[in-house]
Length: 100
Image (cartoon, rainbow, N blue to C red; front, top):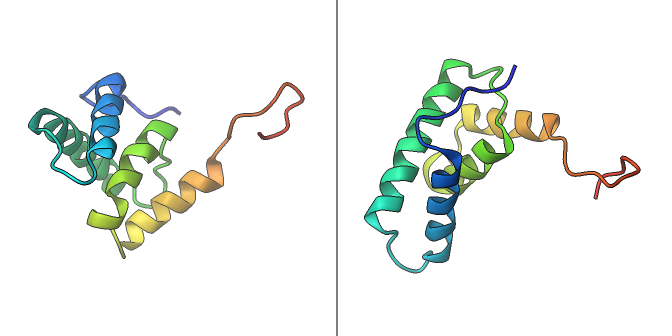
């Protein structure tokens, strides 16, 4: 079963993530910070509701990974969520079905 969409759109979240990554040395603009904060709060609530089974999508992982070391370092729930993502990750493959 696929994960339900977050209340913010993924293009909006991706754009905010890109802006935040580009401004690592300085403050993130208020709009991007608000988008990211709303999205990570919603995502973390989903993970906590299913701490042993929630599997992040690639977009969710990108968002979660951005906050991982600053907000969720040492959290067993976060570590399990990351492990489940990698255990279920189906990366891009070439035309022969071999991972790139």
